Image (tube, rainbow, N blue to C red; front, side, top):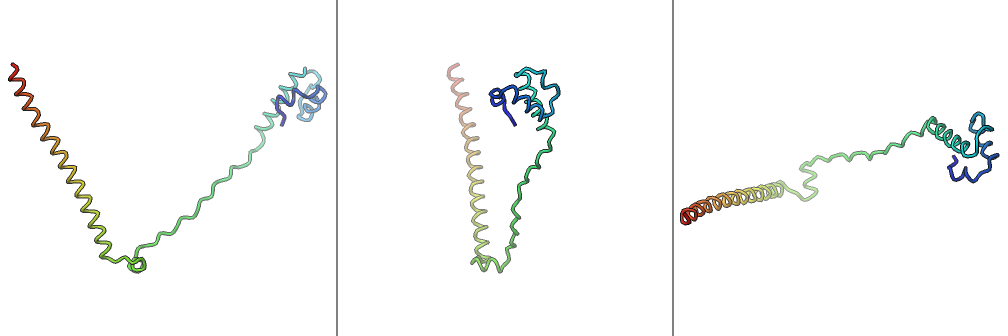
Length: 128
């Protein structure tokens, strides 16, 4: 495929030969610049009609098989049922602690808001 810069450098006789190869009709009637654009147009048409190569699909890696946790597997890892229960208890107590802390913070915010309202009312009464 030729680009416009490359075609501009060529002689008219070379352009006519290229045009004939691309099966452009009435090559002798075109001026140099017209012939260049005809060649470019013909190349674009030829490129769009050619079948494109199919895109290569990415191959996926096979999924790893999930290994069920059985007592045997856990024993191999050194885990016992007690260890698992301890871990679970620890998680739940941590979760409850954060929930209780959040509740306490909300209650504190509400009580602070209630305490401030009566003070504003007293200040308004005193100024009146």
